[in-house]
Length: 124
Image 1: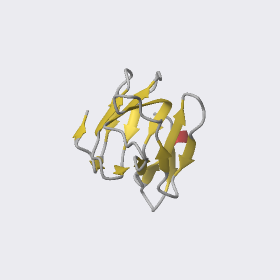
Image 2: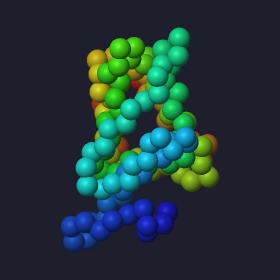
Image 3: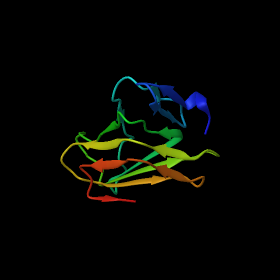
Image 4: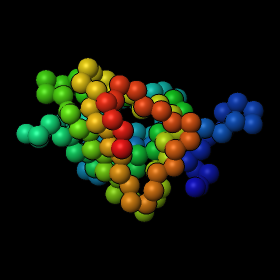
């Protein structure tokens, strides 16, 4: 965990930045100021949206995952391909009415601190 991933806020407080980079570089978010929204990959015939990332760190401000498409995902698979641990420190909210199965996978590990998810049917 490097200090470059953190920003000092109120006295004595340290906030982790949201740092999300897709494998194809189409998504590149790095912020502590606002709550970003992510557009997921289109679903396949089975209703699965498979999203690949180099980084998927969520700061305290959280993120919104947009699943309000014509064909909302039944399963949102988030595969992090990295040698670094993923850090989730805020709310992950799925936009839309489908309440999908939300999966986060990183072979290098996931560190959850003060994390929660909303509008999901199941979390893995």
